[in-house]
Image 1 (cartoon, one colour):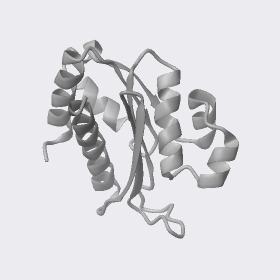
Image 2 (cartoon, helix red, strand yellow):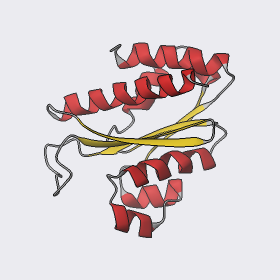
Image 3 (cartoon, one colour):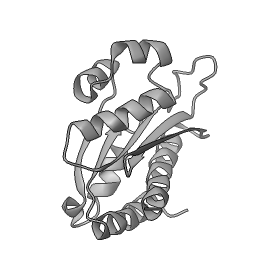
Image 4 (tube, one colour):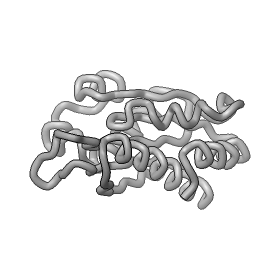
Length: 161
């Protein structure tokens, strides 16, 4: 797999050629996806904005995620990943979104959600897609894998439209 900067560049080319803007909503990556994107000169042609919503309160306030949804599924869930991506779109000018939420470690694991559990959300062409993955390694490695995977999967989804 390409590294996150190379993936962001390819994603940018795909979005720009389709005249689409991207937004991101990040939790466990803490701005890592936005960082990879903004390393690309000219990204303002295809990147609208990013939301770093680490706390549940910020997810509610900035992305309009209901407290009841967070209570029912927990912040690390495909349901919240979908709501994050959809909430980001509702609060900006973009047409495409991705989100990340997870447990990068070294602590935070709960039954059924070990360290390395990451949930993703993508909205492309009005369709929301989610996925749950478990990555291994230390906190840094898990976050790097998360950023690269989020960008790679979004690139594949954009290429399908």
